[in-house]
Length: 161
Image (cartoon, rainbow, N blue to C red; front, side, top):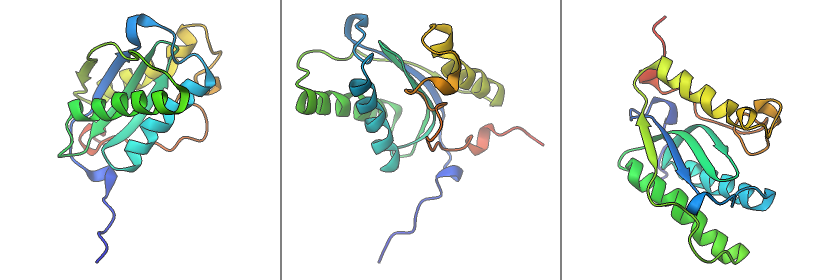
């Protein structure tokens, strides 16, 4: 018997703003090929229902995410999927051997809708502030770029109306 699809929008979980950096701050994700592979990895694990993906941006030397791990997956495991999955595929597909990621990551648990919006805007405008895009929508390696399907604001963070 087939398992019914999970109602991803109603899943109760914590939401996090996460930043992780390339090893020694190298601009490893500046090429279209490496940045697109990272986006592919992020989307693959989202489709496997490891987490809800609310926003992302791949910058030349770091990655910002706004996501909600889906239990029983933890934030730590989520980042292992993304970083480990990317390292594996980059080695296999592009011959990238050696360190790709700085150890660890920085995370902030999003507490309310204002906090969520502040981090969403931070992610969207990161390429503009870095002077590598004119608008958030013009930066190919961001969820602000047209065509990406994202998960909605988590239930617990929606404003009271």
